[in-house]
Image 1: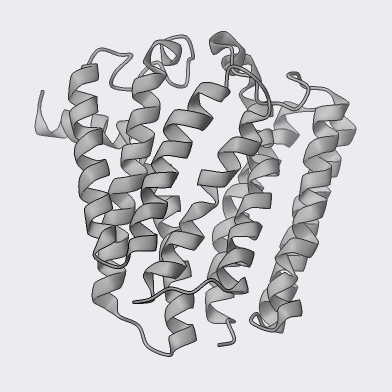
Image 2: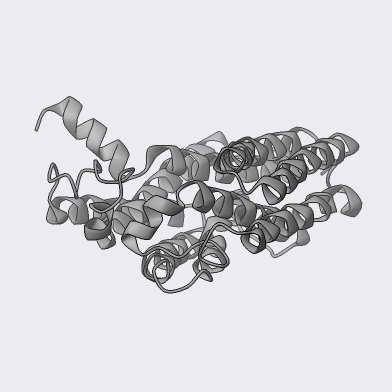
Length: 290
């Protein structure tokens, strides 16, 4: 295997774009926690970024190892390194274990809570969420927990001795609620492919008005949840306005999906979800009130 080929397969093994989104979310929350202390330790930020990248990559690697036979059945995943035969399960396991151990040890250098949460996130994502995808649509609810842990990990990483407060809980809650319209819109677009592997991620297991209704309700709930930072005083009016406008547009697209039940509209909801979270988190960082 050439170096270029290995790098390409490694990026697919760790689901690079998803891993980078996780790292971005944790990094922004770290900087929010740093602003609360009115100082930024850039060395700790680099440690978090590296450790978070390895932990997220490991979780995705374990996910692909567990689902290697199912990935062969779906068009969008059949070219991943394991189902395509370019990487053995043993090679992927060694890489994933190395990333999990190294990432956890790196994050433990920051504090115990950060390290423990990273191990918990790997376990929840790989060992609980991944097997549940073929059993019940409740898998989306299960997956929302490890998916919302990056803000907690990043925020606590900013402190030598982390203390529980409302700020990381609200950051967790916003990302937790966002995942429902995000995952369900993806499941709508990819439902035909998912069915080949037996994945059941839409609320009713099919593209119908009830499933679309769940997307609308979750997008609606996201609006007041995203406004909590402003109401509680640690977010300014700018983040409040951006969250409201972005949330209303997200809701509008979800309502259009409810009306049309169209895959093209579901794709618009999906792409909106991709932009919504990093936008809101970035504005939250710059409009954070310590």
